[in-house]
Image (cartoon, rainbow, N blue to C red; front, side, top):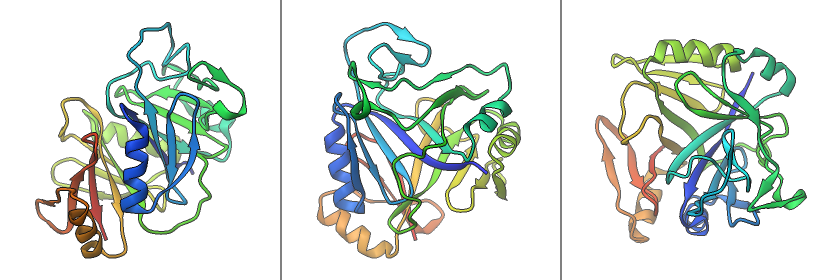
Length: 252
């Protein structure tokens, strides 16, 4: 079974995002790249804040020659699965899908300090960039809260996307909603495939963090000057925007 363990963002100020998630959700910074990109973990799940670049350089597949993403649009950029066998996971991919290796370079610097966790990148039939890694995304498979436990991805055909992700990563369907949304799980982290588009683009729309005590987190956020919003129809959830406008749903 594949395990959803990674979300990456294109960020103007990676340190500001890293500091925010460390402060309010006790995430741990585990990697600072030569480019200024940063990675934090909750023990299980990896959030990568990838430095946005203004300069134009040669694009090679889904990445640039300096190792950064070809897509430099600020916001949530892609997500990734950890798998037991990279060869088996790649062999299951439809041959028509665009794919490539993830470059082990950052900011034009190569070597161990620039090494990236992902080993293979593919673009799913709905245009989403998806990473695969058998090494893992620098986390320890340590389950604790607060923790990232949900990624919501907008797709034009949730049923077909569901069959794709079930087949590729052996995820289980745990709920189907009247609006066509389908919730899948790897046993710990959930993937929501939804026709709803809340951003001005498709793909991953927001992610969710599970906490032990929602009221404590609400007070902590409000005390830190973070505006907190209710989630319509869900009294046990709140919604915030992080310093760069990425949407986060928080729930017990």
